[in-house]
Length: 486
Ligand code: ADP
Ligand code: MG
Image (cartoon, rainbow, N blue to C red; front, top):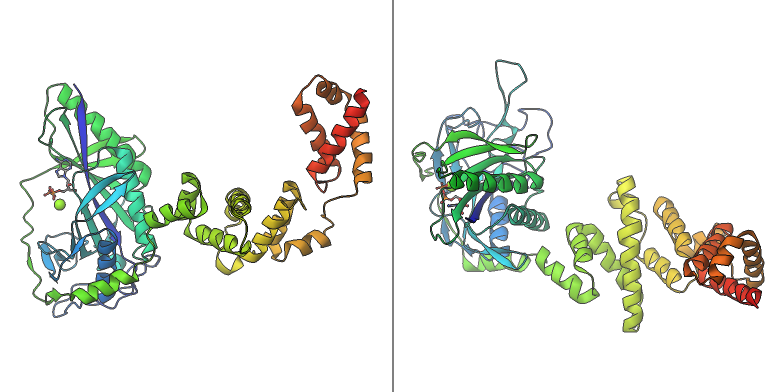
């Protein structure tokens, strides 16, 4: 018997606003000192009143617009009542029946995953349980931080697809400047609802909710584990228990946390301290026109405009700064270039950015203004490579120099004496020397082994520290070998 997995996600993301959701305390996720970004409002003192953060609502609207959601013209906040030490007011201001956004979808590898809703609420405080201590600590810096919640329809069919969904959403949130959405920092939190049903059965199986997924990898692994576990339960003729399970990353297993008591009664009611909202159509349309190019639009454009491969485009979409840099380099290559030449130069640029430049950047963790290679200089380097004025070995050396100190590649080549040796007589002499010293390779070449010539070219390059044009070296060697043969 085959079992079909069904997954729906609930994803929370802390929004990147200056202040908290209902007060002017700082929203600073990097604050290391506990309980400094607090005030009577987010501490739930009696007599205080909340004021909604306009910027947070704007960000949720942007997310909704990007996902093709319907933006509610009329909306409100509600109180979700429960008691917990991380909730100073004894209730969370959230949204119940009138979320800011409904519907919409996110396309993952050609499949539309439908979105149920996107709403806004406030985050709770952070509880810390020191090892071995018989007490817990509370840090209220996070209490009242704007928190977006997105719920999907049960349209996802595997752990991998769920992971991709979460990654694509993260990318969108970053493009919109809505959230840094770093899972390791808890800025984005994913809960997965997982069920399986026997093939042929229409009705969805009993779902289990998996919490504490702190990375994309654990999203994928935890779901895969649950699908296996639930299928095995059904195979044995048992029933899946509706419950909340945690994820043990070390063991690679989910474990039961609590069985679903009769649906929680949160006694939701409209938040009496915040008037409901009416949004004008023009207001929403104005926001729509502010949307930047979205990740999937950029992915498609990079492939279409530059003929990039899927993997290359993906890196440029995820590493947005690098992608933008690449486009600037291409625009500096020159105007009115013949299409084939532009294509060749673009390809060279991609290769040098993705392999060499990215390597240098990863090694040095350079950011912003510390990055010294202007797109213009990078484009010039690419042109020098294309014209054969420097070999790839020299290009790497020049690039390293540019990375460290900035500057114009031609000037660096000049200063460092890295210019290609074009003196054929000199190359001829070196080639003769290399042939004399490598009888085995010469023998192999005569037997028809093409790699032997490549080896000899390499020797000439090494001898001249890469300053020889490899093509010139190859021709010199071939001519010498031909004469030697007769
Ligand atoms: P609850 O009322 O228990 O919170 P919801 O209907 O609000 O359940 O759904 C919560 C999440 O669970 C949504 O993402 C939804 O897509 C998903 N979901 C609902 N039913 C199933 C199911 N049978 N299997 C997997 N996911 C499901
Ligand atoms: Mg729910």
